[in-house]
Image 1 (spheres, rainbow over the protein chains, first blue to last red):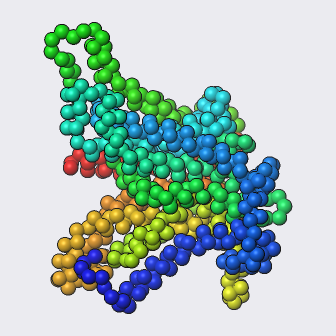
Image 2: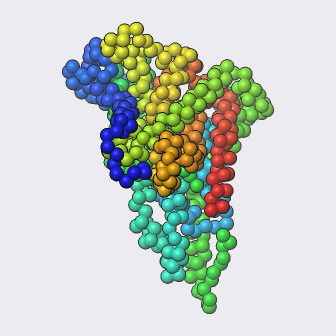
Image 3: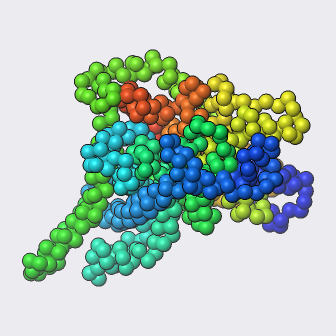
Amino acid sequence: MTDMTRPGLRPSRIAIYGLLILACLVYLVPLFIMLVTSFKTPMDIRTGNLVALPTEWTTIGWTKAWSEACTGVQCEGISGYFWNSFKMTVPAVMISTLLGAFNGYVLAKWKFRGSDLLFGLLLFGCFVPFQVVLLPMAATLGQLGLANTTPGLVLVHVIYGVAFTTLFFRNYYVAIPDALIKAARLDGAGFFTIFFRILLPMSTPIFMVSLIWQFTQIWNDFLFGVVFASGDSQPITVALNNLVNTSTGVKEYNVDMAAAMIAALPTLVVYIVAGKYFIRGLTAGSVKG
Amino acid sequence: MEQTQRRPAGVVSAPSRLLDGLQRWLPKLVIAPTFVLIGIGIYGYMLWTGILSFTSSSFLPTYDFVGFDQYAKLMANDRWLTASKNLAIFGGLFIFACLFIGVVLAIFLDQRIRQEGAIRTIYLYPMALSMIVTGTVWKWILNPSLGIEKLMHDWGWTSFSFDWLVNSDLAIYTIVMAAVWQASGFVMALFLAGLRGVDSSIIRAARVDGASLPLIYWKIILPSLRPVFFSAVMVLAHIAIKSFDLVMAMTAGGPGYSTDLPAVFMYAHTFTRGQMGLGSASAMLMLGAILALIVPYLYSELRGKRHD
């Protein structure tokens, strides 16, 4: 950090690189184990060990996980649940991001009496442990006829995601000079014109942050899925848990690992493609205000 | 913040006055649906759960009030006490280990490392995974017969034994391991961002004065990162209190209920054991724990902002 030249290979440099590479291995090994196990035969799993490569590569674990594995009483694989997760995640991400964009715009640029209080209430909403809303929400979804349905889950994810998306957009728009908005208003531009013509064109980064954050959160959610969905409407995380913890018959670890890979792939792909925005969302989510 | 009503001078036609009024109400109209949703979905339901925690509700919500009975029952409930104790162990170790690993990795990564971006990506990818995926993998790695134990035997360490996952005294520590694996990279990212903001001229000056690099980090840089410590502890404590998925995937609270955490206790009693009153009381105590953490934090954050 201090010297202007890159230091040579002193022993301390070797130690630093050694530790960093060791840490890389620690983080990567579980992924490696998951991958190699998913391509092994059950026989291979019993005779080999965790990190040994398969003696015979096979995709039987993957096909079985996708279309035959038992998740509780049903044995139709996890493909249906994988699509459930998409059907739940895509609308929930879109709606919560759109709402968040408008809310953030209002809270940053159209303040009114009490808007700061509303913002405080929203901010606090990001921290509430969801356990305190589960039971009333379950009762409400039942009343609305949305219990155990994908639209019900979408609604839940929108309600509890919008606090975060609003926060993202509000903090982003606060940094945009008020003078810009004032000038536009003097020129006769209204609420929506200003949003669509001035703010929206410069909002791509924060839309990315919000979309990616929401996608990861909602795709990976387990609590809402296990409480508010059952049977055919369950998301992938719940199905994976059922599959892994179903205790009928011989345990097939290759199927478990393939199913875990399938559940992990969408968010992993998003992370690899747009990791920059993912990290920004994480840090924005932690350093609030 | 006073809303000033600015009307154009001169005669205003009725439609344009209507438009003007609409224009003023538009922001509130746009934000209203969210606040209805949040008002009911967070604050209303919080109150509702609070009310249920004072009733004798079992399989269905009922409204005969029993005062603090459910809380008293909770405090005498062995399973709840185990869950609370586990939260203390899990939370304490999880926060400490994540901070330690995160700080060390961030400092090491800040030494102008080749391929820093790639290494950072590797440290952080577990955060993109579902806790259920993490739990599934670690359950397999720690499998008492085919997992790491067999690996060590194959490598010649035949006396090695590792059955923590099924040992009711030690299973909670396996959950700590998996959780630290998942979240420590995130703490690293927070601290690395903090380190990048440190003014390098201070460090250069200290070096000129003959201070060694470790001493500079310990005495100057780390103390200046106090706000990052605070946010990291907040986020980690928050994750710990809400932890549910990882336990469900790895041990489902077992063996027995030795790895129960409050969130697992709440779920089990509310949704599978038909003790809604007790479950609600446990949820309210979780809220209390979060409040005890968050309120001072938010207060200092918001006040700090005002003083800027």
